[in-house]
Image 1 (cartoon, rainbow, N blue to C red):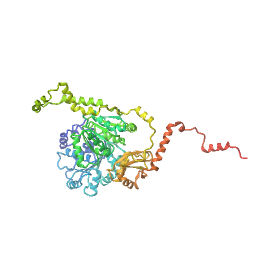
Image 2: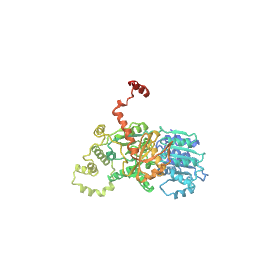
Image 3: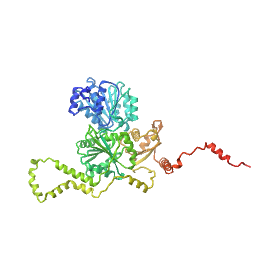
Image 4: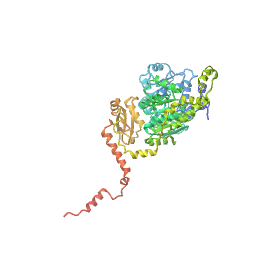
Length: 591
């Protein structure tokens, strides 16, 4: 394997990365660093989250910066402010021993004035989110006519978040004589479209397989009733006393609720979502990085850019609507050569989603059982004993207190003392799990439930009183996915903080839920909008588009399975015209 010295990097950069503990380049770094240093060709780099993409493009760009230029030389675009700040921090660390190198982060959710002041000074590299970057370009504060490198990091996620128009607007203003570098964990059609439109004969560099999860991550799933999902989450946390994990939820509301429940139940947990200010977000992240928090509950968007190498687990409280999102989630653990575990809490209706994800990551998920109360109590008890065995006794520090302690405990014999000492740490678990049962969902239980209950009809209206349900006239036939639909909503409403509820993609049309407060905004935003060649029609879900078509289709499908003989291909008896002639030929002639 090549070392960083073999990559052709200069001494100042090598000294900085050596202090950071860099030893050997990762596969993506080994391929991209010499490619960017020795060629001006556009590059598409495909590698999973946490494989060192920032150094892969950052180190060669830093080395080639011109000390004579007084303008911005490189723009790096990324989906979230967290990732923006992380990339900026990394580039500052890499350039520690380089003279006159300035890196500036520009992102929304913070005052624009300090960012404008930063740009008025000489800045070589700007790292930004698409919205704020475009805003500064339109104000003519950020001038990009002379940039030499344009980097799109996490390109797939930027498109999923609805930044397509912003990216197109920025790309159109960049000079043709630049090197464009796209880095992504997956390669959906929208990313390919950007490559076709804005890159010149790009070379594709793949570290690992496309769209496949990391090798050193094991994938597990636990099946419970939907109503037992939170109980299952707590049991999984309790059975792993040293857990240090991200918990993924679908919506901000669910993220807040689950985090609040965990905090109330005594867990070291907090939430990360789009409603937090930058100061609140940084406070939460600092607590998580310092391991004051064991569980960080987050939405997919809010978790982008979290760069922590020693997470033990990723917990999927819900499976994502788009299987490719699972790759991003699971890629948060198993970093820097370490192993990790990705756990999914599912119910019986998630079978199809699970199979799609297994196919994508090319791994079979291991089915496991939620531990019982007794198993958890045993594990926690032995953890306490192990901790007591390994503790270091600092005799000079505790010596002044021992005489009083011995006197107070002298009436207890050895066995009673051990019982009481363990109980101080252990009583909470014994009390909580007293009388609890098995919450695992079995196939027999599912079969009995189906036999016991009539078939459910189509659920009318929104799943929550706070949501409005919308009909849209495109579906899987038009290649629509949940991420595309979320991107369409974000892109056309020009708001990325709208709460999106349940999404159902059907063949020719779909349904989605939006907070009621944004009802009129959604209806107005989708006037004169096209998806491919289809003119979109978005309406509030009504009896005409919700309660009639879908149940009719489902009833026909059910009939097919209930009476398959009826739907078998019939024998051919000639055309309808021929059959009509035969029937007339049998009639008696008129008199």
